[in-house]
Length: 224
Length: 73
Image (tube, rainbow over all chains, first blue to last red; front, side, top):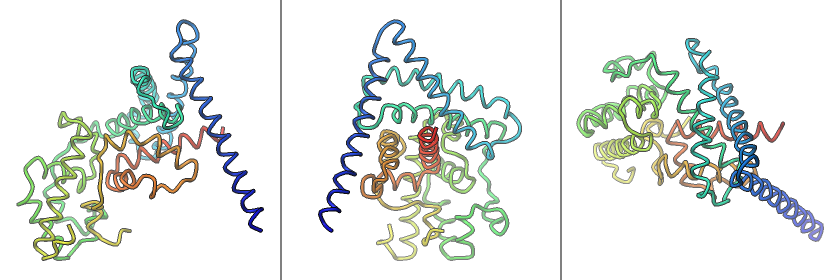
């Protein structure tokens, strides 16, 4: 019955509007507290820190299986550092919050980013990053899955040639480390004294060059 | 497994705004995901970036997991 369908849809919209209004109220409450002065502000900052610490610990727990045994006892310190640094960033950026999302979601992304970067760097802190020249020779056993899929194809040889001939030294280093050796880009950013965004841009440009080189060699410009 | 084996190495070819622009979208994307919205339609460039960038993909999954965890408490 069309009328019933519309009623259900309208009720759905109504509940969603109500939920959004509640979210707006929650966000407004956070903003009021953080923009206040004295004890009201201190209380809001304490609640914010507690929220950020929960997010950091939740992420550390989610990734615990991937963390090396060595240094696990330091992970909770990393969570505290991440929550404190995220709180400082949030308080500084507060005027930029436009309300496009819930305040808590906006705030939690800074905590997630801070802990995530720390955990990756922590996991790699005792590991060297050396371009592995043997990667092409060990395809059969331990190469990354993406590379193994190309094994014994002409494309693999084109790719190998393109990496050697079409990339700059820095592009080759970053492509090989990030894609073939699976080094996280924020670890690379730290080691190369750069930023995650800048490393990703170099990786993106390298991939574009390699695609073009492969398409050229295969006579398939449309693939680029 | 991706149909084009090159995608695993060279990424998807659609428009990719990069990590910094994707970070700006993280919160809107997660709220939309929690509301069950069509993410491919609402966030095509963000989706393409997280397909290409392992770090941002892992971060998006982490933020969503944390937010879901808090909603269930």
